[in-house]
Length: 148
Image (cartoon, rainbow, N blue to C red; front, top):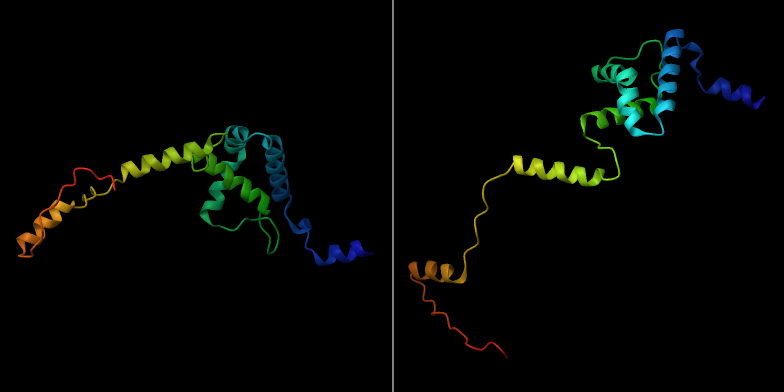
């Protein structure tokens, strides 16, 4: 009895079109096959079906056939986005992914290098500038032995 009430409150996919249900099943099967290896996600799932799904998501158009007020399940959307990030290099794959990201950041920083930083003036330069403005500044005293 409680299961019947739960089914009445939670909308199901019974209103989804058969083509949507079949496509979703195909996507889930592909994701299940490639779930254990992110490289397979990029090399198998991406060209097979996820690239098409990603293109549809990028357009912002509603997904047809899902049923009234429904869309793609979030786990499918997340897997699609993750695969797209792996493919375009935003999210590198592997145990040294952090190092790869740091290298990419360094390369971007070199490419976007700003103007050279101006060196701070030394004490002699500061004293010369004050003297040029008429301010009395004592000559530096050199200490031969700085052992106190």
